[in-house]
Length: 327
Image 1: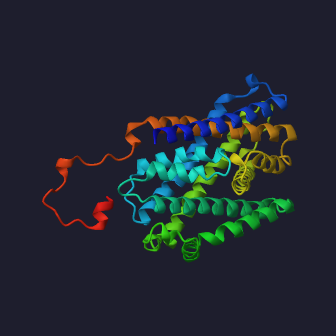
Image 2: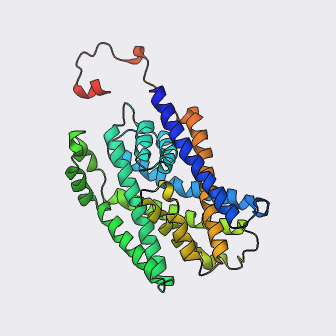
Image 3: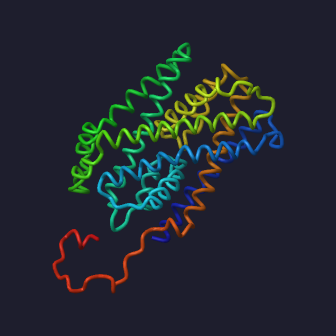
């Protein structure tokens, strides 16, 4: 296991390094000097991104609890944020691997945790796509191809989050072979839980829109006289860019996310400014994710549960059920 963990760490570190290198190169290609950028605002953008991710992480914890898993909030959030590092590896499957590995334990089943990742992720994508489609449809309906893209993504992403349909999808995927009780676990993911998720993700996406707004304050010479007027555009841009990047197999949505951001923002800013904003947004988010992951990985408070000492167990109890053996 230590060897496997080391290999995973090295793979993730390598691809994160490549992403950082691309970000720096793209900023330099736009002719911006690093000493011109207002780095305080870049830091604010990273902080807003983490705050926006927090409701989504809490929702993932809520899904685990709804599916009958006795996970601690701190442990769930630790797994959630560190799991983000997996999206920078091709295929993005490492997100599921990292989250489940960090949250599983005596009271958290690995299969249930993996299914919970898909529930949370589908909900995040659905809310982001719907949020973007509503804003673009109301305020930027002249952007025809973006509106079609947003509406299409909203429909495709929202339908699988319908609880009865999602349960059927899990059954069709034969997850029951890995966990015979998975259908029983899924009964906890009802409309009330999904409603909580939609509300949490709405807050999260709004804060991420504010993160992009902060990035523009970091770019010298940018006219930010009416930030409230620009805020809906920023939010729709982040939602659509993130969703578009997610549905592609490209690590971290490299290129796709920037293309969407530049396409939406070039109507209000110069192409060069939009390009730098896209790169700075990626840079601020990656730095904040890496720093938080390093902190959480080494924080004792969020470490995995330790088993109870032998003397705390009732040695007189000889009636051992299969459930107790698994614990």
